[in-house]
Length: 515
Image (cartoon, rainbow, N blue to C red; front, side, top):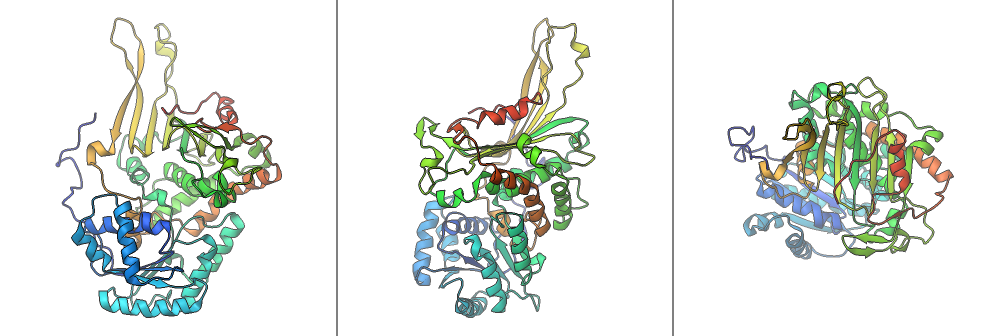
């Protein structure tokens, strides 16, 4: 086990305070929904107990359910005690709870926004929030442009007199390239790009953020982070769960739309990007966008040869038998929606030419895991020809994103004894061993960044459209050619055989992840 850093070795100690968030009111559209109770309110509580949330702060939840502010506070109080990631400290929580309000309203009714304007003025006065408003769109995607337009018409989106207005938009941001472009155009009629925060909760994970720190703060890795030393990159985002009662939504989306243009491409861009000139938001996002635009376009033939789709049948997960996707609630019995995707992508630039990026993501796989694995080229074998060594195992660097956040490095070492024999060994770094665990929902960093105006971890319009541009040919071909056989992998397996064939054809194989 790794030895934790001493206080002297760490560059940031727990006693070093961070900047407080700006005073503001956070308005949650969809305030009675799952996202608010499971993630947003617990995240705000974690920011409060971490002494990062400004005292001049308030929350307004908006929903169609008729209830008073007192009823809403009672509901939120019960929800937090169920979903908090740490024991609830009554004093801090009661203070935050007293700053939470509720407004009943129809999101398509302009009167809702006129009443919101009145409530905001009162909350501003009571809590000294200085006219700064953060709108969180925790609603179905069809309401995104409706809400933004109504905010504009009610005069609630305009920035003036030093007051800021910011809008967080949840994924999915469109369901294809055309719809993403239309949505961008509609919201930009009301908001400037600097006001739009397209959120991907994946970027709230510590290890995703640590990819940049790992690459650019360590002098031993960046010099070998290129095609001369790296053979291939594998990205795995695997889930053991099925559609969890969301069959109606998921069947209209599928694994490709749900995971690849957002989560997967964020991981690719952070892994492959060139060093930015600074950690300013646009400097980082400029380099990410360059990578997305450099992903080699897929021809229809490429889609047939370099992409794989799958759908799970019944099987066994963690000792329990689970149903096939087509047997899930609200899923058609003849559904052709994919629950697994594997891709081979190439990046057409100097650093990554001819280095394949292999991607796989799916539901009902044997293990819940997200990771980026860097496979290095084999060392020359010439020195070992007259020894018992038959082959050299390539070095491998794995950045584990969830659930066991950390980094491991595999390399060869001599096995003790009179003969030259090699064994593969690992050096493992676990976040918890070094820094301890921090109560987190994954939204704390993202909410905090939005409140201080740092858009680094949020997608820009060109990044969203570049991501959809890459998957557009896949969507078109898969729509034109329905799958020949679904389901084609058993729940509890690592996907269809074709996914393994995808790598075997080039003499590689998927990294074995212990289940």
